[in-house]
Length: 507
Image (cartoon, rainbow, N blue to C red; front, side, top):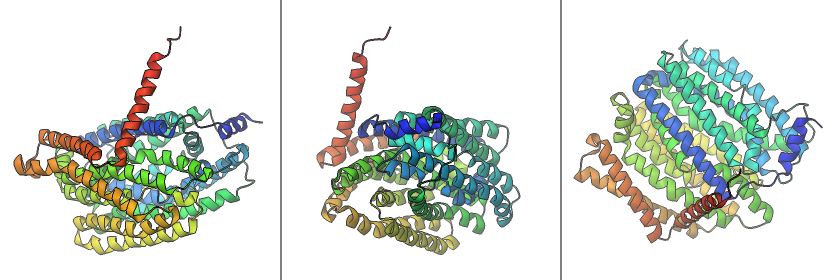
């Protein structure tokens, strides 16, 4: 048995190393730290080094490459986290398939860099696309090591991977931007991020390699991989189509403005709720394997997502103009109304969390793919109708797509999980009340202090802080389930801290 085989056997048999709440806490640490690094980097680059046109050039190249590169995972992460009886042989087979498939996709991305530049009639796009494509050669050797960390709920290692990769991206991008590399600085930052992810994940997993190759028992991986690939294509088209269409119909500067707005909204949504998605997937696998109903825990997840993310995204929408002005400066102000609409669209997407994950756990792949295709078609149609009328209408089309998303997936999730519509409606109502409480001080501030166009940093901080306080009070008063989750999480963290302080010091 090789060293890799021994590591795979140990990982397959190792029990979870932490509870769901503790894993969620580590995931939040990872998300917040990574966000802080990425957010600070975006502000520095936008204010002093990168123009909207340069960001637009990078965004088009990145969007075009990732249309293909999103296929790299091939469902291996979900397979490792969702497999009931994960043996060392199954893990080794998944690793082999992951590397072979991902390197093939990376090669296609590299070959596509030239045609992408030709399609947009921009020779400067070719080296940017080529660097981004080459970064995906590094991805497959990090997929399985990081997935095994998630399966055993080792989110301390996952935090090291995410934070390390974000720091590498920031350091390289800012350094090269300082020397005037423009869009190429962003591309090499993306390359450094994947390199760091590979190094840290391999370190935390103890050097896992897919050799000798193994393909026996590959049918379940291919079955899930086909579904995952179809879903990845749909998600990629939905997520990247705006930049590609705007770049073709308008110009790079318009793409840069939209990318700044959509990127900031997505970053903030992931900061609030995205970190714990990876925690919930293996947690729901355990509930499924125990035979317990999934409806009640799913409603608790919906309450957590909407209770946190709706107030945050609504707050971003009403604060869009002062946020853009204070953080990025005058030349990015046209992104403010775009940010408002894109932030509102996030309310719809988080209203039905895990819509792409739970169907895989419950073997509803065909039904999921049908809905993915329908949702993607609606996204492209709305975008095609809106794009000729300008950037604002493109942003509005994202909110319209969010509403369509809810119409498509809500009946599917209810039928699959068996929760009651009334219970879901009560959660939505409570989250809406908490959201109203959170944004009320901001809206009052615009009337009594200064309008949005003149609001300064002090007004933004005071009214947002008052909104956060009112939000927490509202959670308690309306009996929102999130309040108990927050208290429980704080109790676990304080208990762990007291336990650590009580441990005797080692000599």
